[in-house]
Length: 99
Image (cartoon, rainbow, N blue to C red; front, side, top):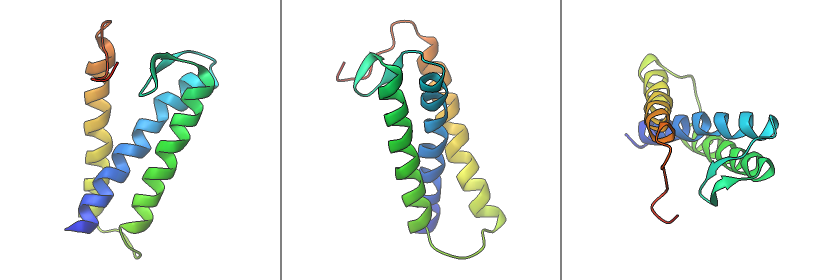
């Protein structure tokens, strides 16, 4: 069970890194936990923090070949964070709780 939980969160972190890296590489400001209009450089850093966290969780999920369930759980984590963030960022007044 722990294997599936770490795989799920790995998918969430790795998929969350994508918009931050894309916005940062394109030189655009984008919301991060550090600010509503974080600079491109901050987005690159936040994207890489997500990659490291997701990669570490993937590593900790255990060695060996993935079965269909593991792949489905990884993809579910990525899908859920993607859909959630699509709705979240669609709101022009979107703010994280501490912002």
